[in-house]
Image 1 (cartoon, protein in one colour):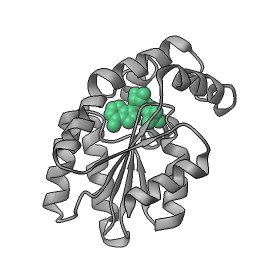
Image 2: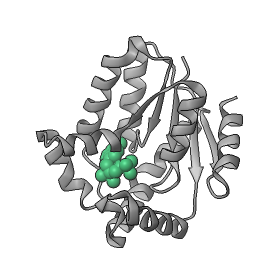
Image 3: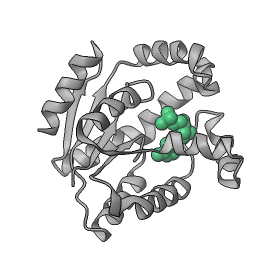
Length: 189
Ligand code: AMP
């Protein structure tokens, strides 16, 4: 089973590259951002709780996203070739919880592909996306900057967690989409 984690700050191209990797490797997409936006659309209690954090550019509490991922894995594990985690894990407790979950199910966590993009480029890309995506968290520069700060403080240390396990591949996420994709595929091996 091939399991990939696509890692990087908001606006680093995780969603774009996830689509291409899914097509190539036939993986099941698990994007916590997409799952949360769907919960909001359905107006579930979980969605309404998460929205309070997302509207400010803050991370949703760990127990909420860990529970969500755990039930998605339970529901799909017998019917998929592998997973691509997109936007998860975003904190050290989430990474530890994922390791435990995968160990329990005897599924290996494979490569962690980390996309590196400079901060000003991220803000520019997100504001550009906000003009067409309809995502309110992409339309306000203050919310975008909060998301980048959350990334720096809580998510960036997750790269070190996986580096220590020898699983981290760092890929420059600026340049053409196809060039970046080719570098990601080379890292998958
Ligand atoms: P994304 O679509 O990945 O950019 O996520 C949008 C928002 O959803 C983030 O700014 C967070 O508020 C929330 N979110 C998504 N994934 C996570 C996660 N793994 N942990 C905490 N919050 C998350």
